[in-house]
Image 1 (cartoon, rainbow, N blue to C red):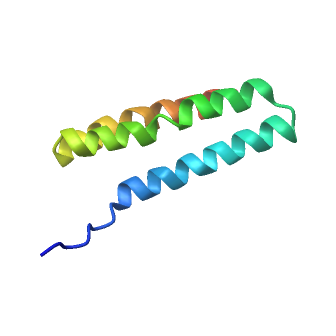
Image 2: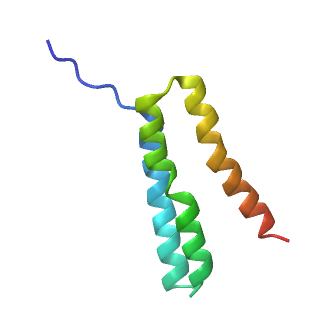
Length: 84
């Protein structure tokens, strides 16, 4: 008997985040003419999706959360650093 696969909330959230990042990039690039900022946002925001897929496939939950926190911290540092 085949059971339907349970939706993975982490993958769906990271995918939604990536879509928002791409839309933000397009808005900044086309509407506001912010070329460097839009490129940096795209570069820092998109690696979460493949990283989360890899982490879910290879590692236990504890290691997954530790590794996922690294790009989030880097992104937060960049955002805070750009305010100064």
